[in-house]
Image 1 (cartoon, rainbow, N blue to C red):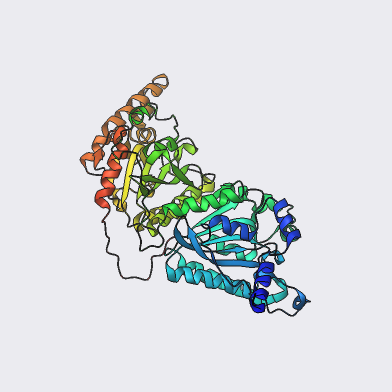
Image 2 (image 1 turned 90 degrees about the vertical axis):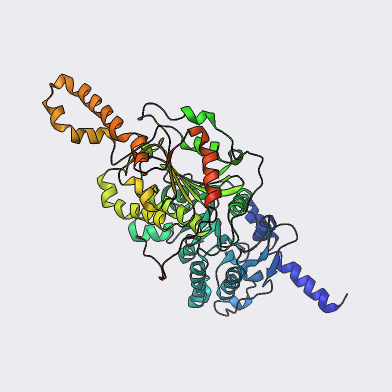
Length: 515
């Protein structure tokens, strides 16, 4: 063999081992795959093309001139995921902790820049100890990544998988992406770690409690999905991509299905409890209308009073935003408004039609909510509804009261078609509250022992008079009363007609969403 070729092969083989057998074994003992193993599982076999394997850092301080960091701690390149092109980078924790240095960052910048130019998704497999402190201010060039993240936003899908540590300013890059997946027990993410917090505030907390996968999925909402291990995380990435186009100029991918588009769902006819105070699980409705009963939920552990999910209808991706009556009676609040607004904007960015399933008694009352800015947060969801130009369908299942109607895309928000079930009530406020105000004098004038019965009779009369679906359809607030069993068929029919929908936008730089 040519000596130079042989030399190249030997060096290549060494570099592809990352930090070496001992570091790889340690990675495995922690329940984690190596960066190269993750890349190989993410991309279709023999399709990944790597950049910068021979990249080397230039630091000569603090003994770094004698430190070899294979591939400078990050694997970058492109390939195909389920036959579709994508770019990715994976921090190699076995190589100097996957720390972010000058050359390391340049490799990542090249990949995301190429993804933007090519109009294909970019995936980050994050497992990094943060900035390389030996390089001091030079390592700060990784901050340029944030600018690329923003440039890519709304143009190509960006997915960040937190598969180990993600600390300090680097966490911003994940937060700027469309989807964040965290691996349980092996990942954590925070700006300031437990030691700094203890020094500054005296609070004692560990990595897992502060920034672990469960904390960010359930409490902060920074992460959108929870994976039990690296393998499930990679499958979630592939699942998300299956609903998304390559870029904003393309249509979402269609998946053939044998599930009939005109399939009726008889069980929905009696699904809504007669007692309007009783809860139900809206996920059963989502599953019932979806192709083959399959859906992918977005942020399932966060703000559970609203459900956001991807489904397919007639093979085509659809985004669903649904109140969840079994949690906080389906009221909207600060966190659910943020969750709903983000999901609506993701769908709108990538041309995915939206369906709202509404059973909302209003915004959650309370001093904490008002002082926490529920008006500002609720306005985000209203803004997102108005801003969205994809086909929009709203279906009132039961309650649709007050200011929450705007957040659930009422007619005034530019909804294309508003449907209502026979069980639906569209009105300015709940019947109990309205009757208590309208008939206050009559109720107070009645003998105490008769007041409860009188209030019930007046409340029922209010519902019959103005809370029924016939009034809202008579004034075209709702377009049609539909049989629940026909819901899937109706949605697919409407989306077929709206597929060519176009909206002329004003020539402006951008709107100013309340943040």
